[in-house]
Amino acid sequence: MKRLMSVLKDDGVEQSLITIIRTILAASKELSFRISQGELSGVLGSTLDENIQGEQQKTLDVIANQLIKELLAEEADVKSLASEEEEHIVPVNETGKYVIAFDPLDGSSNTDVNALIGTIFTIFPAIDDLAADDWKQFNREGSEQVCAGYVLYGPSTMLVLSTGKETRGYTLDLTHGGYLLTHPVLTIPQMTNEFAINMANQPHWHLQTQQYIQDILGGDKTYNMRWNAAMVGDVHRILFRGGIFIYPKDRRPQYIEGKLRLLYEAFPMAMLVENAGGKAIDGNFSILDKRLDTLHQRVPVILGSTCEVELYKSSKSND
Ligand code: FDP
Image (cartoon, rainbow, N blue to C red; front, side, top):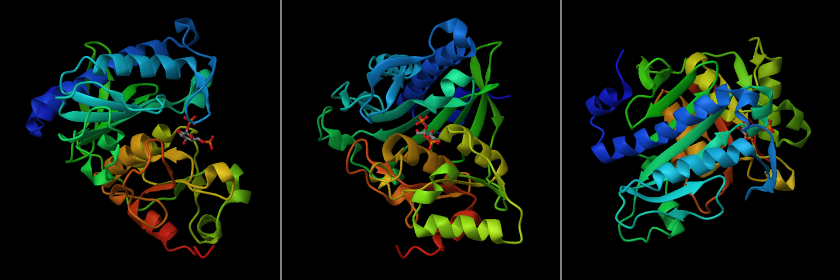
């Protein structure tokens, strides 16, 4: 089995980008170890603080953020960082070639129940004539990403990564401590009978989502519902088995633009899904064509098997 580094070299990824990916993964290995120790590691539970999104922070959110930030801050080729857990962007190095955004711990509500959680990240080329502390470093379109990936801390730790070509899957080999290529090309099956949505939000949905769910449940095909409460877990299943993941906007004031964050959740997942032959939209438009307007901007996310995403898109949306 090939090691990650030789796959990246064969894919023609430039050395400075490889070094940054390696650094993120060094943090992921440390996190994987601590998470696997569960209660014994002393990293579970909540802090008494809230993050910038007004959500209660878990101890692991804070540790993961600190670890990734500190390791990346030592890299000469990193210009700026953005994180779900940081209100503002973090300037690193004026001459850095890349800017990186990450969700240090996706699916926080799963940490205390020993269920799926992950780290999501995205990398853009830095803009030379903007300072490292200028948030416009991230005022970008999804299609400008040069690398997107996530690490899933599950029964095994897996990395799913794309540097512009195929979306590939790697498994952390605990015997030598490196990621090995176990899934050279991930291709999302087009036909599916699985959907992932938080059905408890149904009373608040707009017509498009109501219509789509009503149509598939009332149609000839039998569907199954799956919900991990962690986007990484749901997207991972879809990359392997097909299906559709929906986190729509709804009528509640705090969900007017959905729940998920465009920069460090929707952009990277959209790149991984589209490079695996699937589709990712906000209901009408491609997520990769969207431009980030504010650092922690939210967006509705509908992604997965192309046919199913197209079906959602064509559902009535006149409200
Ligand atoms: P979490 O808040 O636990 O970090 O990132 C947002 C997210 O998890 C997604 O990973 C997940 O899909 C979603 O929120 C879960 O939302 P619900 O609370 O509606 O289940």
